[in-house]
Length: 319
Image (tube, rainbow, N blue to C red; front, side, top):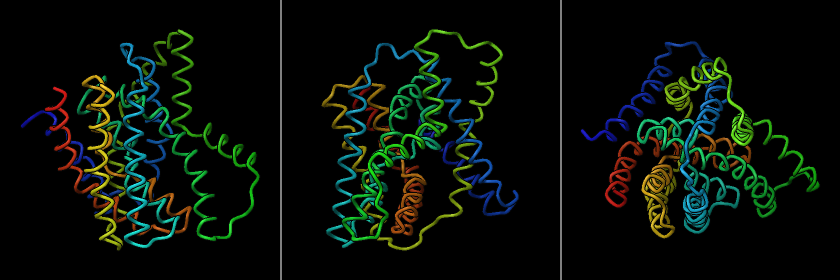
């Protein structure tokens, strides 16, 4: 069995173990939420901190990587939005949710441990360059789209001054644990100050828990969701997310002449299924919750096959 296939199977088995645990009721109710809070608030930010402070980027310029990955997001989002609006006759807010389902990968709970398992610490370092701007960019785009979509649909929304929107955005941004971890890493890296040995050991201990716990917690969280209806639309969005988006990333990686490992990471990240963010945004928009749940569930189930396919294709193209 090729090493990357074994890594993929192992990763999705950890997710399956979490799902089976939640299904069986072995752990107390509320455990999944507590573990998720720990992973998102402490373990993953420290994993990002450790990666960004210790990684050797070898002079890698992130611009081509960002153009490749976020270009794939933009094109996949547009296709998803247009399909939902024109074929399934959805409203604009549902179209925005569909764009999330078709264009945003689960880079934190799934992507970070996935890339560490498949491409090691160098792959994780490349992915961290995407994650470092993925969260603030996603938050900024959704602030704009929420206002636009609600007005386009004629939904009643409270008038908010632009400066209040910006203040609220910045407040949420700098309270986000991922952003805190990234900013702290940048401060350490730019200052050249060494991390004290004992602090480094603590960071390593918590960061080491991030991967397995993130995947297990993701599996437990999937118990809340499932195929909730709108299956045809969910299948369309899953196909865009798992097949079209990585194909676009592959084309752009060739166009921008990305180094082999950087290209592989960009394609692998694009091939991952949508995460819970799509459902959370649907809840905020008060539309598309069933669609987001269905697309996320179908995507996670099929990603174990399609992601392996794209890793093989990327390995063949980039060596």
